[in-house]
Amino acid sequence: MTRNDSGVIAVLDEVTALVPVLRESGIEGEERRWIPDENIELLEKAGVFRLAVPRRFGGLGVPVADQAAVLNEIARADSATGWVSMIWVSSSWVPSLFPEQAQEEVYAAGAVRVSTGFTPSGTLTAGTAADTETADSGSGSGVPSDYTLDGSWKWISGSRGADWAVLAALLTGPDGTPVPYAALVPFSALSVADDWYSSAGAGTGSSTVTAAGVTVPAHRVLPLADVLAGGDYAFVPYFMAQGAAAYIGMAKGAYERFLERLPGRGITYTSWTDQSQSPLTQIQVAVAANKIEAADALQERWLRRLQEHADAGTQPDLAERAAARGRAAYAVQLAKEAVDELFEAGGASVILRDEPLQRFHRDIRGLSLHALFTFTTNQEVHGRAILGLAPDTPFL
Image (tube, rainbow, N blue to C red; front, side, top):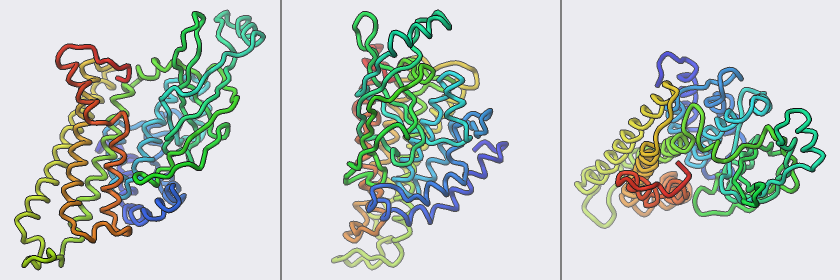
């Protein structure tokens, strides 16, 4: 942690104190397919949703490693709450890439919850000719005064409690070529379907979001390439780092729960009356601990490099961006393998619904299928960069 920032330390301390409450809420989150409102209120009060908001708007604007430490702690308590918090915090930085007017609108309250959908499954239509003429007469830029957004976006995590959405949509250019753009839209203008039924990440409320003829002013529309280019941080490496923090937090939560339930346990149908005395268990817990430690080390190295670029006002080159994807995904893989190890060592009772360890196991395995965190895809991107080949993806 950054020890000269008492605000950040206070947030982390408050979140740590909330761990028992958040962990207890896991079953309720799964039943309602959305994290409890109390979790959101507690995290809001702790200052979590001000972490990435610029300081000039009343946010904490803290370094990325400090944000990751808080997200890690939330996910250690409850995987669904950790995942949603990661989405909201990492996405709340995105509006700072938009024009000043948009920033003032989004950050008016000092804390904000932003969900994102970067698959361009919507369309943007430029304003009417009259609108364009009005814009031309004012600035001569030829930029429409507003756009119309239509479309649906699946799997929008946190959609049931977010304030704003950043949604990718295609805008047809003058030559007829569709170009991906990002539209910044208040959730009050969107509809959220009650369609999130899943075996993993059940509490994340990752519902389908729909825009039907939503007017979006020009100051809240940017080319998607500009968003991916980033500002203080490179966006995709930043998001990968935040995501890895959540996965590693889940692994830490599973590890702690495994140790909590170990005393007094034997190994059924064997002579072991104390499982901790079994060499197999000793090996399993050590392997899990070291995989988590290795994931943390990979993460720490990249967080430091990302912050060095931000402090220097520079951006990572393509090779570094590809490496960020490869290393973050490798850290996620290590975290997932650690939880697998602990789940296998947990005995049959680990499958009971009120046992948090099984929820960590289901959630980390399911959420690791997220396209941006898929292990093989990210190793391919990283490997291409190592071999001097083009990354073959704009998501760097």
